[in-house]
Length: 315
Image: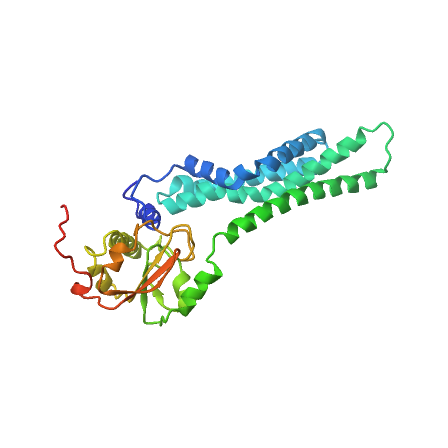
């Protein structure tokens, strides 16, 4: 629950408050929805037709072999997944078992669909009272029909996936903005989100909230959680948490708009709500500013860089 540091990282990386990790059942349902809800228009009919074809040709060796292979593989995948789903307590191992089970089981779909549709085509051809084609030709025709159906459905799905992937990347203008910044390898960049390697990849500078999740390293994981929570607090109220800048040698502050992928990731926090709280800090010089990406240079990391002037905070 709340004491799970891997789940805490998952939430902190998204700028969300702590909550109880989802159950294995919830993770499986989520995977099914994300993978298949938008493809039901062809997956459900093709699955039903494949099942019908295998049932009608259940006495043939190929139908029995494919059914047995699919069943044994599913049992094996569930056995491997259960090691993580039942035997581990961390969110990431449980996610590896529960949600990824659906993705791995999806690999069994193409051979099952293809064989089932071919069997259905052969059965439909066999119903003719006067077969027009010889058996080898009939089998080839059934295979071609299955190939055409799966190719059309697969291409339509991949077009949708490609469009989805294209929307989850920085634009050329955003990448050009990053390239134009005078960043060096000595600079430390603080962004309002968990950037997963993007900043050093495009600039060579160090991203304070960058890298991969150190799930299996306890001390590093706790440090990462503290950095994420402290950074989120800074963007929520820069004046009150200005010391975070000097403590972590931050030389640049970058604000990406949620949903823009200007930080190369979807994990862009909703904080800060506006740039006003950063703009009033004398120790920050705004270098770049547009709707999706704003960049500030730290000119004074000291206590007076964003001193509170008569503000009172509730305790």
